[in-house]
Image (cartoon, rainbow, N blue to C red; front, top):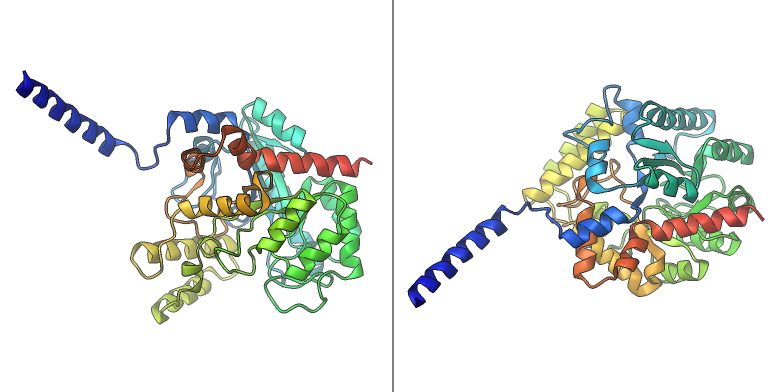
Length: 401
């Protein structure tokens, strides 16, 4: 009898081991899947807009072999709302920047118009909730760089009327009225006109986004705004010392402001080891070849650079950054700022994703990891989207006064 029992136990162990091996690498618990499906999952920064402009054959409705975003993978990942970024380099200015911004806004609106079964154009928190109830993906827009308003509050009003719902005050270069984190400051933060921009954003019900700004610009905006601010795609500087990331003092200030910090998945913003690692001459030559081949095609450059960095992580040329670093940054922001002040701002299709978060379909892994770390279901729902919905509602109410 003992022998039979031992055989049965051994056989069961083999079957169980086989089942574990057979589990997909990205498998999540049934509880995590149910929670993820129930939550409203919002991503505040995505650069797929560049593919709309530069890749004439790109079809967001089909499962693509490259890039991070398309409708099938968004459905797999349970994404309910996405902010498509309106972006061009900060050295594109004046009427040219305005024209390119309007072209990108039109491209986003056309994608929504031509895919009515999947997308719904959203300009408010209520719209996001309505889209989720209808099993559609809410498509929103955020403008990544104040250079696109061409120093004109009237243009800001035009963008708001077209559906843009946040303005990142700078990109990687200073504007005429605000200092960026990407170069030496020339204004000591915000100029008087820059403060007028913040006040006009408040009046319009658009969110003030302080990703990419200098530390002084951040604190000037904080002092000026009458509504909560967001960092649409920034992580924690205590973990990765990128100037694009937020210090603990900035995180505490966001708590007092009522704002929310949306974690960026960019490998260099997640990992100091990756960010600071020396790049070999061979690697630099590959980067130069990408720049030469892609020219001004931004989507080509972004996609090829991500592929290069991913390969370098996998073959040992660069330190490996795992998707779990996203959760580490969430944990840090919760520790410093509180669970009501953190969310998700991936930078999909605009940055190098960590290993294991190659595209939007992997998002449920974050929910699973947070559950395993002991977060309550209610707090996870806040992180996945509830916090940014709350900020949107507060910004909208402030504008209506």
